[in-house]
Amino acid sequence: MAQSIGWELYRSLLGVLQQGSLSGAARELGLTQPTVGRHIATLEQQLGVLLFTRSQLGLLPTDAALALRGHAEAMASSAAALARLATSQGDAAKGLNGTVRITASEVVGVEVLPPIVKALRDQQPGITIELQLSNRVQDLLQREADIAVRMVRPTQNQLVARQIGQIELGLFAHPAYLAAHGTPRSLQDMAGHAFIGFDELTPYLRAVAQRLGVQREMFTLRSDSDLAQLALIRAAAGIGFCQVALAQRSEPPLQRLLASEFSLQLDTWITMHEDLRHSAACRVVFDGLAEGLQQHVAAAGSA
Image (cartoon, rainbow, N blue to C red):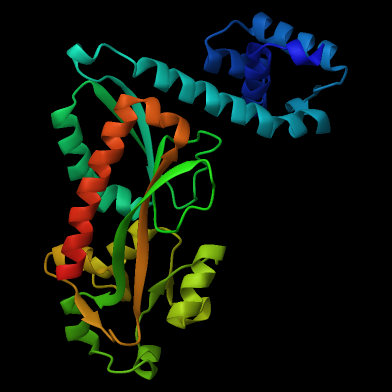
């Protein structure tokens, strides 16, 4: 029986898990509360397990419901990707249409992608673009996004990947900060300065930190937001890491420090699920991102 369970039942299950109540799930899903309740009861009957218990705090999920959550989220992502792909299959004579979701890091999404997205929209106004900005690597296989801009080499076999080039990361400070506190001439001189860096050490940051020879305790200003770190550097609050091209674009340009000790080349990739090669909208956005990012990489190399 479980094999014939419809998606709408799992959709209601996910809604209740996310909202914590039947009424909240109903509002989120655009259904009535009795309908959501019937969906949960039917799902419990067909699966033969209890999914929620009632308490003064609302509906509490059982272990069975929590075990199903990840699969329901994957189904929701696939359903959303299917809808985006279906809407992109319009009449070519009328121009491309559809929705394409792009995921990128915060700093790339804010500092690099906006003019690229504008150019794409100027060329294809029928395409809706969604930007999902996060330093967490979104899972394209689970269809959390359609296209990803990443600074690490993709490893999944089911992805179409294009290497854009390398972007150099260096150590920078605002001229006003250096005027007030002096310019460090060696790694030892950094001990007397406000050093901006990460707080939580993720696996990616651990690899970067090892290559640059830094550790969390060295930072006197800490944030896990790349945008916050960049804003602190631009506000003359301290010394931190920044893409070379972004440092040169700042006003005034940020000054690079200790280039021989602090330099890291970040591989830049664009990836999408191989199934989306059949989506004209995704192909156009993929190619447009590649072109725009190649220009950004070229600017970084000439800075």
